[in-house]
Image (cartoon, rainbow, N blue to C red; front, side, top):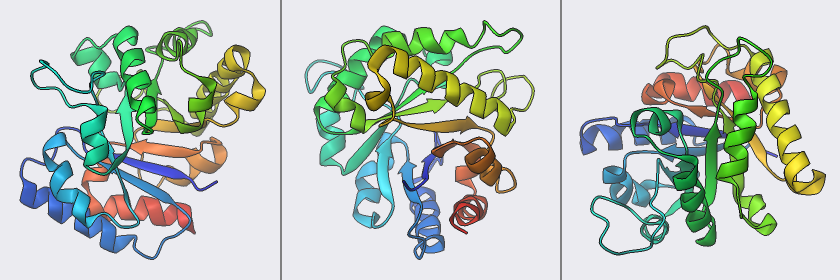
Length: 250
């Protein structure tokens, strides 16, 4: 299976002109790379403009709402995203959990609605501390709530991202190593096997979401045994992001 590299632009850039420039530079820089699956997740405001430029790169959203339509000011539905050419949706990102108070119950409703529309869910889970061996169990609690009631047949469209909250760039903490990522991924897989069975759990790709650079990307994939990467800050630097993708394709 190809490594999955997801660029999360977050609330960047500030103009459509710059968004198009960033996307086109990345598209040009990786156009000959066939053995890596690349997804770009820009802000909602740029999706309609970028969709017409998508070729080998796939389009994703940074969030979604759980209703298809109605009196929900400011929300964007799975149907709208699919109509815009999105194939992937990021859910449960640590920044939304921390800064916007997003709960596991909300994430569960969003996941169900997204999967129902045939979109792929990139579900983010993570632990706030690694001071003791018990701390990582927070991830199991998140998975249990976030995946409650989801059909096993939908697991083929589910991807899990391990985000060590204690190490990501936006939070104070130490730098995570490929070993840390591997431990997180192994814990996630064991939790999934226990809850859903080996056959179902093995269908789910596990990504690492943290401070990724062109210097450490290969280590997280090959030493950390990750199926891909969710990249934030580095995805806004086209040269660095292209280097990351090329480092994994060689």
